Image 1 (cartoon, rainbow, N blue to C red):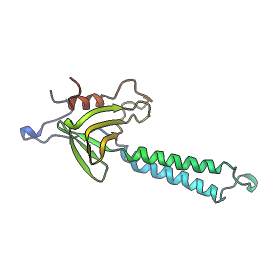
Image 2 (image 1 turned 120 degrees about the vertical axis):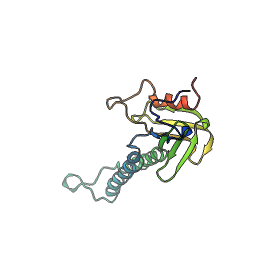
Image 3 (image 1 turned 30 degrees about the horizontal axis):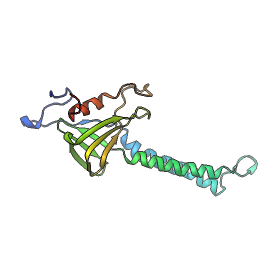
Length: 173
């Protein structure tokens, strides 16, 4: 297998291998900032409705759908925490993956990768890497790849990173 064009040098020749970021620079915001803002902002609005501090015209009470709004907040918060909690920062060199949850980084050899898939139905097009054995982060890692085109709302073809990862893991011939 030939080295990929974006990898410069290698440890085997005494040179330092360069890591390539696969995950988007927006990963930190998607994992920590947006969930905190959404949950606290929507929660504050819901609590204000429940406490009857927000009134409509002529000081009328909010509509009876306040319980519905509370349910949306709880379900939406659970969904946001689940989606954001699994996001990782992913880097690679020609021998292994470097996966970080921003507190700890682990190295995973490409030989542990058993599948790579991309979800084309979500705007961020997350990529999930599946492992044969569980790692410290579980049996899979999900990351948001760098955006190829800002006007692309779906992907008809997988991101080229998916093929790169499959090739490096020996899943493609």
